[in-house]
Amino acid sequence: MANVFERLGVRTAINAVGPSTRLSGGIMPAEVADAMREASQYCVDMAELQARASQIISELTGAEAGYVTSGAAAGLLLGTAACVTGLDPVKMNRLPDTRGLRRRVIIPRSHRNFYDHAIRTVGVELVEVGIADRYSGAGVRDTEAWEIAAAIDADTAAVVYVASATSLPPLAAVVAAAHAADVPVLVDAAAQLPPAANLRRFIELGADLVAFSGGKAIRGPQASGFLCGRRDLIAAVALQHLDLDIYWELWDPPASLIDRRQLPGAPHHGVGRPCKVGKEEVVGLLTALQRFAHEDPDARRARWVALMEALVAASHGVAHAQLELIADPKRAEVPLVRLQLDEQGAGFDALELVRRLRDGTPAIHANPAQAAAGVVLFGPISLQPGEPEQVGARLRQLLGAVSPS
Ligand SMILES: *Cc1c(COP(=O)(O)O)cnc(C)c1O
Image 1 (tube, rainbow, N blue to C red):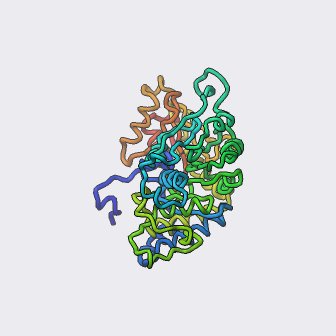
Image 2 (spheres, rainbow, N blue to C red; image 1 turned 90 degrees about the horizontal axis):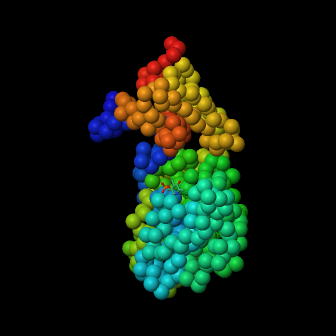
Image 3 (cartoon, protein in one colour; image 1 turned 45 degrees about the horizontal axis):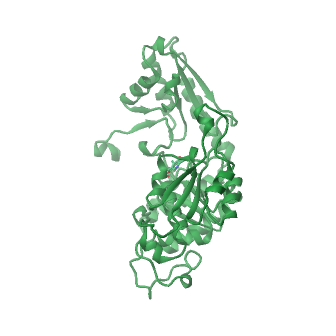
């Protein structure tokens, strides 16, 4: 029987890139999809559900509190809003008009990326600090923590830190500089899982709020993510995200999420209200997060390595290309296959190989990030068993084979 996409007349694809939003993320484990379907058959109070989510996220991250968002980018928007307003509903109602509010958000220059549009949506000014000499080829240095300290003033709402294996300055030094001035640090850790230890790491290093994606390696719903961090900031997040179409007299949110006694009244629908999450996403994210946190990391890695080994095996004898499995955890947190194309021999370049893979049936999406060096990358996270064999067969078809399969 035709699947739902066939019934809609939409092609499905083999996703050998990984959990990219553009390619619809990945494949949810059946347990997660089942939990979402089950959730869809009941109604709950969303504040109560988020309060329980906060507890679960808190247990898994070591943070005081947590909140399910519609993605890491939504987490950045909500987290920024919380840092600007605190628990003041007057300020919440004013956003994104930040006149007269603390409206500067400091970011190391080398951390700027397309997702910081989510931060600017709140109405703040992003202040880039330092010079990333190590990326220009001109030198070895990057932004230093003292430069962040020097940039903080009375109008500074937050320091944003985008975590990666190569991020500088070290997070602990940034936290020390920010906390010395009583300014919170918001960490974008969207794609920093695995390793699962990172669920706790940024909080342990002193981050006030950390945003993770739910639709990447966690394998939750594509439109999900979560924040973890300080209880007061998570309360400010909730106040600017939850639907507040209710009389104050009737409004009774769990005190562990929002302590009503701290408020003069409830704010209007907040700047985060368009980042709505449904009960299905909350339940799906929690199910996937618990599964991710408890899965044996070696078993997870073995599953990914097996998919990548199958891709290499199925490409055996392919002409004009060298395939290398990179499975050493020191080289790659997630195992991958690196295809070095002999562009002269093949008669076309790596970008064209990516295009031809994509334009076949079924479409195969590969990672072109290193195409300038003649390299095409393949990742395991969004692949299904059986698909690596199809990728290998297509490569042999497109490039020719020097030995029979
Ligand atoms: C993927 C990513 C995001 C966005 O995450 P979503 O969950 O898709 O909103 C933000 N920042 C970084 C660094 C990312 O890699």
